[in-house]
Amino acid sequence: FVEAATLAVLFSIAELLEDYAMDRARDSLRELLELSPDQATVRRDGEEVTVPAEEVAVGETVVVRPGEKVPLDGTVTAGESAVDESPITGESVPVDKAAGDEVYAGAINEEGYLEARVTSTAGDSTLARIIQLVQGAQAKKTEREQFVDRFAGYYTPVVVALAVLTAAVPPLVVGDPVSVGVAGYEHTVVGDWRTWFVRGLTLLVIACPCAFVISTPVSVVSGITSAARNGVLIKGGNHLETMGEVDAVALDKTGTLTAGELAVTDVVAFGDADAATVLRYAAGLERRSDHPIAAAIRANATEAGIEDPPEPSSFESLTGKGIRGVFDGEPHYAGKPALF
Image 1: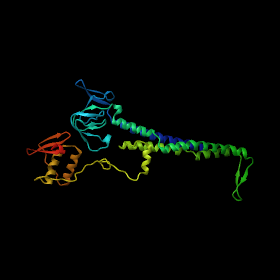
Image 2: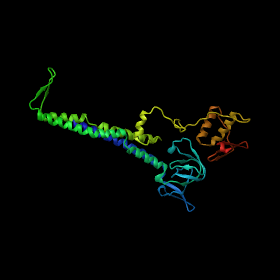
Image 3: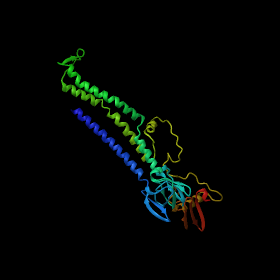
Image 4: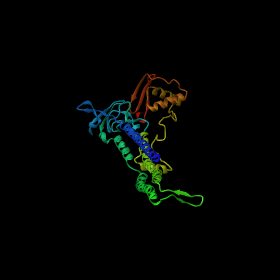
């Protein structure tokens, strides 16, 4: 009965691996759920109150302070800020938001004060829909899984029938031991019940389809979940399998294939100023900013040999537009073209 014990152990190991994969999938979904805050600050009757995000209705106004996560999808009605939407969109650079712009639940407000009118409930937010898509993709069987299930539906009964026939028919047909085969290659066939029972069980073990049935679902679930955890949303196992046949991929989103680390490519000076002077004052302005673009400008200045850029006597962050600083009594600006 070693074969039977081996079969039981193999099935147990397969089920253990499947449970492990499903647990990892559930853990990844929990990580996605944790992106959205449980509480929201809502403006009601002129006062700010903190309530569960599920209780906030469409049309109410939520308040998002610097460093807080946006609790619900909405449209900005007041304030300006840079918002980190990388957990939702994958965009590595913070996106400037002002009145009229949309914000998504789970995004992080980095520096300014925002008020937003809620456009969808907690259960219908962009993040919630992403989670629902991932759950649906995990539950939906691929064409290969469906084929394996259909194949197992026919294959398993045939194997069981052959194993039963192997164990039951020879003892009934064969009486005394009989030699079969050609001269020099004879094989003695006996009618012992125990011998044929073991052979039938051996056939069942060898032909067991557990590897076919278990391998595909575990691979698909693990692949979809791992992709979701890394910011890639695969809407179904069919698409995951199709990727194995893809020869070329077209990407139209900036930063998809990059590390998200900005770098200065050129410094162009206008008027009487030279590039070194422009870079020197720009690095001085950016000394007090923690924006990713500021870090890139400071790094470029260091590479250019500007070790100690000037310190502004005063500094002001113009949320959503840029920054302002004063050097030797003269104001200097760095920011978007709209700032100028």
